[in-house]
Length: 152
Ligand code: RB5
Image 1 (cartoon, rainbow, N blue to C red):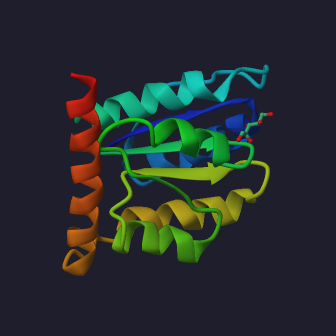
Image 2: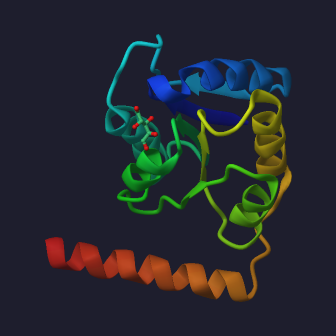
């Protein structure tokens, strides 16, 4: 399995931790930056991961900023991206089970390293439940198709 990973400076330290953690699970990490704790703009790094998921180059990605909020706003601009901020285990589980999230976002200034690893583990292990949830996601996909029609 391959996972795209990126953060801004607010998530840099946690990104480094999670990279090692993911590799310990035999996951190939595509680290798209940032590569130092120097201040950067989260839209630049959120875009790098969201583009890959949106195009179908990769199935899953993880983004980290200070709160998770900025990265979430950026990532969800991209078609076919379902990016979920999960700063707790319950959100992590249901972001997969009910909303088939393909990008996990964590707030690096909110969540400690050990909890973050648990959040990632739960997220990776929880399958999408389908059923009524599939119908709801299809409605979101239909909204996206409508949007593109307007832009043509
Ligand atoms: C950067 O200081 C901070 O604004 C960013 O990491 C993030 O929390 C935005 O949502």
